[in-house]
Amino acid sequence: MKKGYCDVCGKKTSYTVKKNQITEFKGYEVNVIEEVGVCDLCSSNVYIPELESQNFKRLYGKYRKLAGLISPDELIEFRKRYDISQRELTAILKLGKMTINRYERGAVPSKSNSDYLKLIMNNSEVFKNSLNEAFKKERITQKTYDKVLGKINSSLEDPFKKATISSLTHEADEYNGYRTFDIERLLNLISYIADRVDLHKTSLNKYLWYIDFQSFKINVRSVTGLRYIKHQFGPVIEGKKYEEILNYFDEKFYKEEFEDGDFLKTTVKSKKNYDLSLFKKEELEVIDSVISTFKSKKSNEISELSHKEEGWASSNPGDMISYEYAEKIKIPF
Image (cartoon, rainbow, N blue to C red; front, top):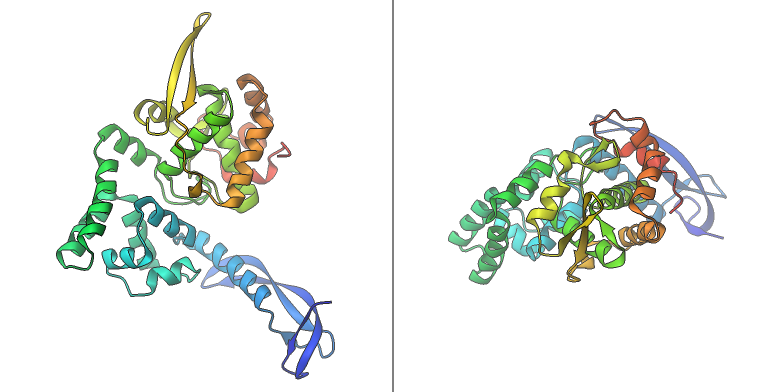
């Protein structure tokens, strides 16, 4: 029997969890459920920290999506990409001392701060300018400057890589699973898949699509931030950018081509240097479940399965497939 302290009764009492619907928050129609503890003796509300924490998480999560605000996960992932601490990022961006800490713990940022952070995260040149200013004003050390500058320059040095990343990067919305595209996550994910299965170029799109959509179904967020379009042979990365990814990015994997009758086929081989720390435990569970389900299937079998999914079947050729269809994924991973 669960108990909580009732202020009215002046003691710990058993309580019942009741559900209410919050329809509006800060001008947005959120329609989220809150769970409230109600004293079994006097019917007064009982403060239950665990319930309140989950209530705020649901409410703020929905509000962030509707308002297009940056999420705690996006900030944490950005810091990981550049290997910087909260203190270092705060100094580079000249924000309040505890701003990044609060945002990563769940505080909702203002629209202006959110837009500024998104600009920094999606534009390496803007971030580089902020880094140079922070170093000039002695807000960061030489060590921090050199570390971050090296990572920024490596992402800017190849114009083909830069153009590919730019073409795949969009505001977080229903078409990228509410995650801004993350090239590091994608490259490490492909390397991991290729290490676990006999990965062909034709099956790569399906693995990624199912992983992203299943993650959205379970965790309400995609893994890579990719957008997918309806293609004759199943969902593919928008603009067929998997070609550029396989051609220009060779840090984590490489491709091998071979002739199969009249066709030239491409397999993807892992360099086995992937970093799984980029992914959360629940994301890895989704990734492994999709790999386990498909590893014994051929590319054409996976393609046929994707044709039965409503997301593909209900979309017009060439149209982007909304992640809202993730709820109707048929395969029981």
